[in-house]
Image (cartoon, each protein chain N blue to C red):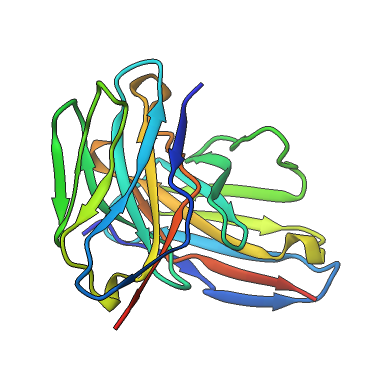
Length: 113
Length: 114
């Protein structure tokens, strides 16, 4: 079956530090890949996505590249801000599963001033 | 565009009572909505898929009679937690399926059962 594995958190960084959150996946076909962000007490917001190999999703300074050869979709940001503190979820959607999303465990990010 | 709302945002109820949570797609029609449950510091667990005009499809291990789902219109799905108990306390999140098979998430409902 499908699965998503994220690096364990929590992650604590200082403001302006470089961020990487690792995400790897297992899928039988060619999934679309997503990063969602959840701020405290809120639902999920789509941060970025990529639908095919070598695509790069980007938004708000965050980037992730769909790497089929390593089955990875690592999230990066060059300079984090305090306002980036949130939980980040990696997810995939398999073509054959219709609209179902499979989520990773989530990674808590705290950015200190 | 693609805004999903939930009501209430938080609710406290006594053990044994029932509570209804609404999920609305405000600016688009959604034939399919999803209900998730999220425990503290954990990922989202899909509870059921709600389809307008038909019965919901529940995930394995989710009690149909306890978590009643109704999707009576293209913009509204409701989740009723019947005879709630403290172990039902959780954060419930809905999503609505929009254009391009994207899920748009509501802000969540915090349920506390005392």
